[in-house]
Length: 140
Image 1 (spheres, rainbow, N blue to C red):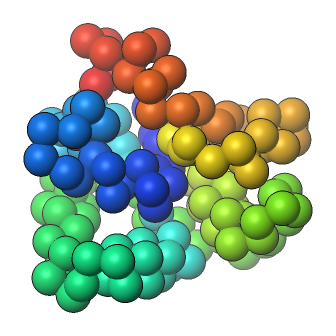
Image 2: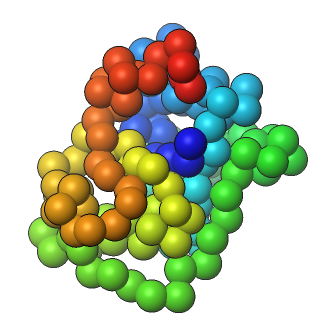
């Protein structure tokens, strides 16, 4: 299974003892793959570095390196912009990445991803709570 994590989900999953931490645990332990693209990584760096500082972004970058070395990081370069999300065009970085990576889900709390559900592509938006409820013990 492959997932693309929205930035806010990643921020919360990094927090010590946050319930979303199981998402990163599942990736680190090889239970699922994490899809990223240059646009997604840039978004992570801008938001995490801007909110929490360079050290916080550095720890995420090290985590990404670790996951990449384990073979559970799917890095894609989308050559097409699908323009699925109209209300917040920056979110299209995640949908484009997920589609190019043939991901199963975009894990997000953002309602702007709702159009992805009916866009006809494989990746579906899912809340972290629903993902954990559905797959806890199976993949996460």
